[in-house]
Length: 425
Image 1: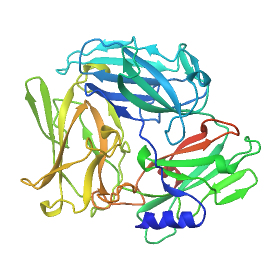
Image 2 (image 1 turned 90 degrees about the horizontal axis):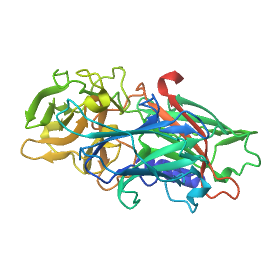
Image 3 (image 1 turned 135 degrees about the horizontal axis):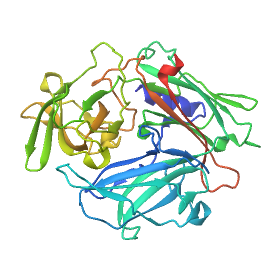
Image 4 (image 1 turned 30 degrees about the vertical axis):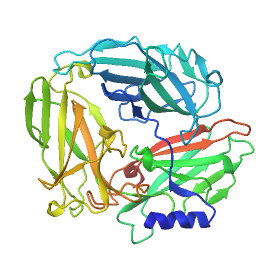
């Protein structure tokens, strides 16, 4: 209800405030494809963003359980800020040939689960983007773009709009100890004859793009500085430091693992049951903010020597009674930060617990549980029931500034940065 009131107030004031309603470009169409990663080279936890005309590329990789060579190709498509398609021809935003064969692959070894590991860098001498904005990487088979295997988002940015941002404690006493407020200032002096109605600000907490908050009107304009600081705008539930799973070894029973089991060539990992942390006192520790790292302490080479396992998660609700009017989700990069059937925990009335099994590659994972109202699912992630919210929680916030240039056919990404809540204190 709090966020419904914010939305109504924002509309009354003539300012759009709300969850960023957009298409989700991160899709997997082939069930044999696993562990799709796209990130700046040597920065596995970073947002998949590169500078226009920069030499530092993205690294893209994925595993194919078909375990035989497949004829894969990739191309890119420029999108609008809300991930809708543009009316532009690829020749308008691509330099090179927009259909490249993926030739770099290696075969798994040691691992019981056989797979082919594909990996390449982008941009490269064959293909590079010529405009900033949102892009989709498309991987497909046999040179046929209709045989999609997966799609993945990435960003091409310019630094024409300066961003200064900080995390503040809300003034509202009702949420001051459970939420975090983002204050943003934009320096637009490099944009001549700025048309402010063509500018969009998007703020995302911990890479959960489905929960990004968009603003289209600043609160104050001071010369070339646009300020977004209204008390009821960029406000996020703080959540709590993420739960973790150390799956770097298939030999060591780490603190979150109950037992290992091998059936045939398949590994099964059963985690210790989770429960609500809402009433637990806050404690600080380093986490990955819902992300994961592929790594292996049993072998030397992570990409092709890491094994896979069927990992079973269990959540025990209060009194073993299912949540009324709510769905429970396993949230984090391990479920692609999507709220769908792949992430939804399923209640077993016989045992009185929620369960979900995921196929995961060896590594270190962080995750949380969240609830969504069954009848009103388009609200911010709700940690109230499962994790609790604490102002002190360390969170990352990524800020995107889009601008449609006069006569432009798409939304350019002219400002981009990521800040951490601890850096503001």
